[in-house]
Image 1 (tube, helix red, strand yellow):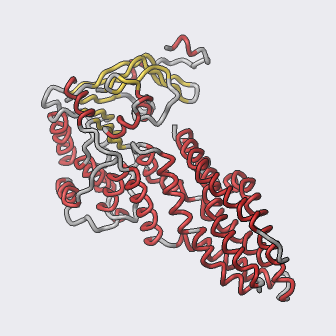
Image 2 (cartoon, each protein chain N blue to C red):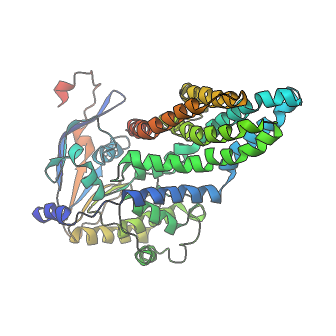
Image 3 (cartoon, rainbow over the protein chains, first blue to last red):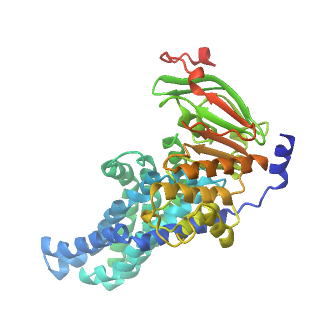
Amino acid sequence: MAIGGKMSNVDQPSMRGFSACLALIRRDLTLTFRSPGQAINPMVFFLMVATLFPLGIAPDREVLSELAAGVIWIGALLAVLLSLDSLFKSDQDDGALDQLLMSPHPLPLLVLAKVFSHWLTSGFCLTLMAPLLAIMLHLPSEAFYPLMITLLLGTPVLSLAGAIGSALTVRVQRGGVLLTLLALPLYIPVLIFATGAVSAAMQNMPYTGHILWLAVFLILGICLAPLAIAGALRVINE
Amino acid sequence: MLNVVQLSCERDDRLLFSNLSFQLGSGEILQIEGRNGAGKTSLLRIIAGFSSSLSGGIFWNDQPLSKVYADFRLDCFFLGHKPGLKPDLTPLENLVWRARLANTIINREVLLSALDRVQLAGYEDIPCSHLSSGQLRRVTFAGLIASPARLWILDEPFTAIDIEGVSWLERLFDEHTHRGGMVLVTSHQPLNDRRGKLRKLNLERFAEERIADGNRGEDV
């Protein structure tokens, strides 16, 4: 027993938390490439929204350019919500979540890595698709850059805030509605400031303030959301 | 060394066990027994640190577990009911991410020889979804071989394992305890006690058939 006590002190290996995060990101990206259906779903949904909108409202250039930014943002927001359901649930289903919780590395760091890979396969891809949708919906050219910047700053916040809801509903079968209810209140400020920035740009007004607010949300999200997600996962898995 | 003192566990207003105390020292195997629903899995999950709300104390190397979680997890390998393998990844890829999460240095050769030892040589590039449940168990055992952890917490490891695999796993336990490791295992299967290091703990002895009435002071 005395030897046992000594062993763990002497053989204390250095912590490789960063390498664990990279392994986790690599794993999740590999999984997405192996079965891309889960990741493509939200993107098709996003494209559908933009395609059906002109049909439903009016294919009128004036009307569409007025609505374009809002449509793109609402489409992106709902598409991210759609992709969040499986974020932790697939790990819960196959027991991989236990390995995550049993890791000696700080859990907030690991969930941040998971949320980052989720953003890469959802929010980031949606941002890359946005120029196409902007053209389809006749978004005025002066609103293009603000739209892209708000999407780049805003979609990670959607992933971070949504992941809290996803962690809380990890044990709930068909928890989609509950997840939506939990995440939407956190999404509304992002939506307001993002579309606010774009409409300010369309009226040739300064929009830096809106962008800075989104940056504030992102920084707050990166700092606080991983703690909330980690806490939720620990409580739910007791 | 693991020291459990006066542990009680309550699930859905039912007291599963109370006043449970045991020690697990270097080179020992402890088999947790008990009927279905006796709280074997709950006990393992409490010890593994999944549950923080408990009455009683758990000590790792004479320190309260809640203070030394990182040290404990570096030195602990947990295997639950579900194998914790991604069906779309190959056994090798699964072992790599699991080892990285457990802060273990990865060496492809070590992992390959571990897969060889669990008779999965040649399966390293086949997605886990194509493997049988017994083979999935074996993949996790390969992780067990490659892991430097001293404490193994295994929940029903013999599920879906063939007869030859059972005796192989028992030899693995012997090897591990011979090196000074510790094994905490739940099983309904009688284990072979070749080195005289096996102890059994029946949870039913600590069970009390009464409704916990919120007056926890009595239980502790």
